[in-house]
Image (cartoon, rainbow, N blue to C red; front, side, top):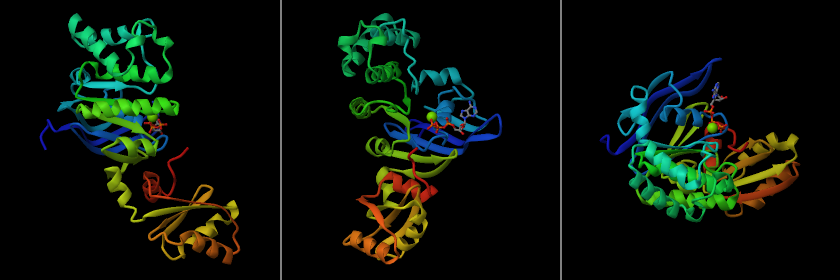
Length: 317
Ligand SMILES: Nc1ncnc2c1ncn2[C@@H]1O[C@H](COP(=O)(O)OP(=O)(O)OP(=O)(O)O)[C@@H](O)[C@H]1O
Ligand SMILES: [Mg+2]
C-alpha cells in the first residue's frame, strides 16, 4: 500500500500519563484514503488520547504516527496543515459570526481573501447554515454549532478530519443531521476518523472500525465482518432477579441452539444459532430450574455483542 492510499498510520503508538496510567498501549492502525474509520470503545478506552496524538495535541510516550505520510511527532506544524479537528467541546470563536469563524480559519491556513470567502460560502451552503451566516455563534443550536465545527475542520481541505464523539449530547434529530453531513463528505472522498461509544453510530457510519479497550486494539474490521465473528444469528437477552442471574446464565448455556450465555450487568445475554422456538425453550428451561423470567428480548447480533464477546462487559455506561 502506498503512502497516498494510507492516510493515517500508527505503529506501536503508546501513551502513559503521569501516575502510571497507560491510556494507549501499542496501537497499530492503518486508515485508507476515503474511509470513515471508527475508534469504538467505552469510557476511558483511550479514544481521545489516540485522536490527541494523531492531531499533535498529545505527545506519545513511544511509537510512531503519520498523517498523509507526515510524522506527527517530528513535524507537528506540517501535520497540522493536513488535518482538520472537531473537538469534543465547542471551540468556535464566540467573538466572531458564523461566516467569520470559517473565513478566518481559511485565512489562518493560508487561503487568500477571495478563496477563503468562496470556500466559507460554499461550506455554509453545504451544511445548511447560509441563513445563519451573519449571526453570532452563540445563537446556534448545539447541532448547528457541531455542523459549523465540521465545516471549519474541512475548510482548508485536510487529508483527514478527526471527530471526537461528534454526536455525544446531541438530540436525535441533530445526530441524524450530522450523520447526513458526514455521509456527504464521505461521498466526496473525505477521509474521516471518528471516535464513538455509540455502537449504532459506528455500525451506521463506519467502513471499518477498531474496537479498543484499556488502550488496546481488540478487533478490527468492517461492522459486517465484526458481527460475523460472533457466529450467532440471534441474541436473546433475558432478565430475572439479580440473585438468580448467574445460575440463569448456566441454565441458558445448556438450551438447544444457545452457543454461549453470559451475565452482563442485570441481564443474561445468550448468543443463539437457529432461533426457531428459542423463546419457549428459554422459558421452559428457566421454569424447570425454578427461575422466574421477567423480560425477554430478541435481536440480531450487534457490535455490542462483539464487544461483550471480547471483554465480557457491555459498552453502555
Ligand atoms: N490528561 C490526563 N492525565 C492523566 N490521565 C488521563 C489524561 N487524559 C486521559 N487520562 C486517562 O487515560 C485513559 C484514557 O482516557 P481517554 O480520555 O483517552 O479515553 P476515552 O476513550 O476518550 O474516554 P471517554 O469515552 O470518556 O471520552 C483514562 O484512564 C483516563 O482517565
Ligand atoms: Mg474521549
